[in-house]
Length: 141
Image 1: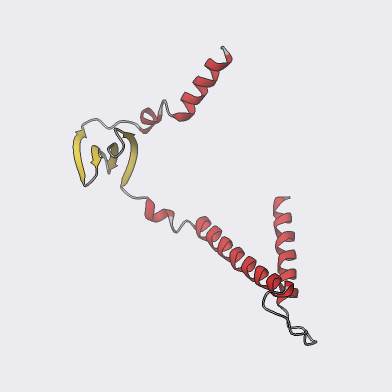
Image 2 (image 1 turned 90 degrees about the horizontal axis):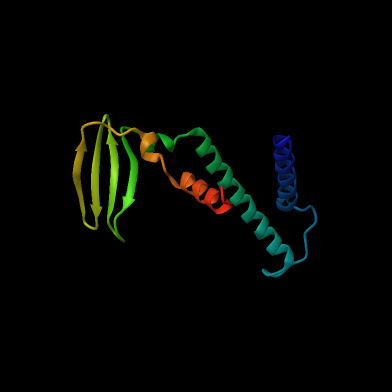
C-alpha cells in the first residue's frame, strides 16, 4: 500500500513540475523578478533539484556502494572516554584485538589481547540495557 502512495505522489509531483516548467503557448505579461509567479517557479525548481538529490542518495544507499568502503578487516568494537580528549578504543584487526589509547596528537597500543573478547560481551550492559534497568527501578519492580 505504501508503494502505491509513493508512485501516486511521484506522478503528481511530476505532473505539477511539467505544468510549471512547460513552455506557455501565449506570451505571459512581463513580470518582475520578485513576482509570485517567478518565486513559485524558483521554488518548484529548487524542489525538483532537492528531490533529485534525495532520490540519488536513496539509490546510492540501497546499492551499497558506500558501505563496501567502511567494511574490511578493521573494526572498532568498543570505546570508552577517559577525559575530555582521551579515549580507550578496542579495535579488531583480522583475528587480533588491540587496546589503543587515543589522546590529542598521540595514538598508542596499550595491550594486544591474547584471547579475543566476543562482541556480545563487549556490548552487554549497553545503553538500552541500562535504560531498561533504570525504568524498572523507577516503576518499583
